[in-house]
Image (cartoon, rainbow, N blue to C red):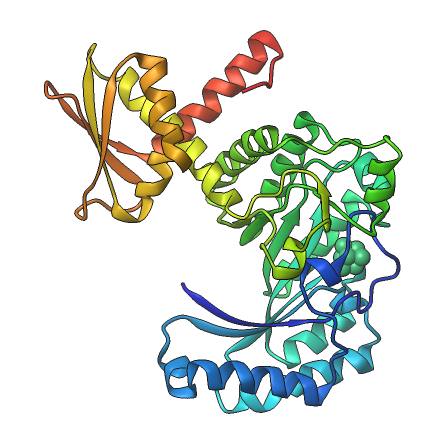
Length: 372
Ligand code: SF4
C-alpha cells in the first residue's frame, strides 16, 4: 500500500552518543529543535502544499514520521509531548498513524504502551549489522541479541517493524553483510532499508578514513553487495523500500561526502545489476542467436537499458549479439518477455532471483568464492 509521509527530523534526540558514521544534520538536511508549535507548522505547511482534500483523497496510509534520532530513548515525558502534537491530526483523521526510528536497545514494554496510545504503527530499528564485532567498532553501543529481543517485543505488541542495515562499516566484509541479511530475515521484519556506509565529514568514520585506517566500499562493490542483499530479502518476501542515502541538498554540498559508494540513483544501479542477471538468464534459456528483443514493463525500462546504455552494452559484448529493449504496457512489473524470432519466452523476476541465489550459494560451496 502506498504511504504518504510527512517527515519530522529530530536530529540526535535521545541518542546516548554519536555513532561513528552518523552526521544527522547532513543526512537529514535539517537542524531544527522541534516542539509542539514547530511540529504543527511542519504538518500544516505540508498539508497546504498538497491541499488537505488532495491529501485526504490520496490512496494509502498517511503517516507522520519522526526520523533522525532515537525516539524511544528520549525521556518519556518529552516523547509524549512530541506525539501529542500530532494528536489533533489523528483525531481529525488527516493522519492515520505515526512512524518513528529508534535504537534496538531502547525498546521497553512501558514505552510501547505509550506508543500504542498515540497510534504509532511503525517502528524502524537502526540495526546496521548483526555482527557484534562490526557493531562494537562502529560504536553502536548495542548487540545483535538486543536487535533480536527488541524486534520480538515490537512484533508481539503488534507494531510494523522496519530494519535499517549499513553494509561496509569498519570490520564488515561481504561475508558478514550476507550473514547480517540472513539474521535479519529470521526476524521477519515488514521491510528493510539498505544504506551502504559512506564517509561523511565531521564523523568518527571520517577521522578513521583520514588517518588511513578505514577504506569504504567502492561504488561497484557496494552495488554488487546490495544486489546480493536485495535478492536475499526479495526471495524471502521482505520488501526493501530504500537502497542508498537520500541525496539531500546538504549531503550534496561540496566536501560533505569525503568518500564511499554514494550515488544519487543508487537503487537504479542495483536494479540494473538485477536486470542484467535477468537478461542473461533469458539468453541462456534460448537457442543460439544473433539478435533478441526484450519486452519490458514501461516502468522498468530504464533499469534494463542502464545508465549510458551500460546494461545493453554488457549483454551485447558478453554474448556477441544485438539486443533491443522495448516497452510493453501489457506486462506487469517483475516480469518480461524475450523473443529471438525463433522462440518467445516469458520470465518472472522471482524465478531468476531464486536461481541466482541458489547458484551463488552452490558456487560458494564449491569454490568458497563470494565474489559474484
Ligand atoms: S543512534 Fe542513530 S541517530 Fe543517533 S547517533 Fe547513532 S545512528 Fe545517529
